[in-house]
Image (cartoon, rainbow, N blue to C red; front, side, top):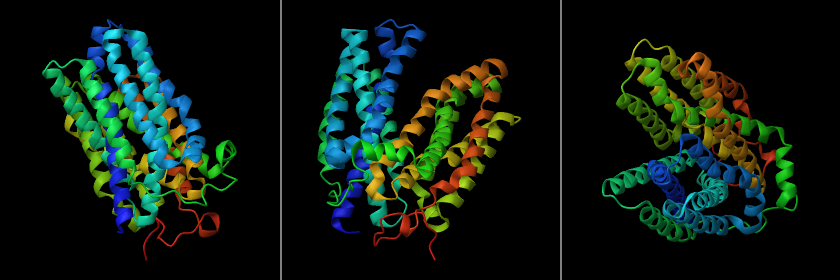
Length: 403
């Protein structure tokens, strides 16, 4: 690996990990924010919608922003602004609900743009390396969330105020992201071309069948990931009669499986190709869900959670890579794919909850299995573009089977 490429890969790892750290830091302090501001469950739900709303609004704008300012400047600015939002969120713990919501809106808006930009850079690094490394970048994000949650737990135990905690993390983020982004690969002077520039490129990407299918594929896998985070613990406790600690263990098993596959499994993509691997993993997800839902005891259910984690590991990161196959249109297409994927975080919790009111949460998870079946059917959309369909580089095409 050449030195600039090595530096870009290292920078991408850092940016992904710091993003995870930032998000986990404020999420881990939700119980304290709720208690200090005396929020009822319904009020807390609306507050949390602030971050999600900011993310959904800004995500379609990410492509034009990235096209206009480039990956390095976009990520640097997003990191600084997200840090400001985190500090405002922490200050909301003492200043009141309006300040808290304002901070969450800033976080949601800026992290959404940050997400698209870092995935486009990750796809470019992956393409130049000629091997599947995008899942490892997403594993770094997961590692960042673990560090953020662990740090928060320690500071809660030490009775460190929310404002002090989040302000400290904010300062770290505001320094680390711009410094790391200096290692990004330089922008290609010929990119973006006039066809894909700005709003025209973004609108054009929404009309491309392949791009939309990749987005729907990512939505199905993101729905599976989101459902795991929202409902594994509840389903184990209510559906399988598990103790609360086992409910937490079930999600930990899921996360460990997902992170391990993302870190160690990239070679499967290079050896067998995206489509074959993704279809196999979709089937693994379905098998895991069926074991989780219908397993006769907790051991089988936990094995199901493990397979569920293995199966959903590649969906989101490989979808990002597929959307960015042609670097000339990467910003616009990744915007579309990630926007559709983000819809899962809005549709998932209420859908599973409403169905769960009628058939139990455990049985409601069959919806996740059904969506995975759809994902298996449309996984062919992630097949790498043929040379005549995309800009050809000298590096090997990532995800294609090797001779």
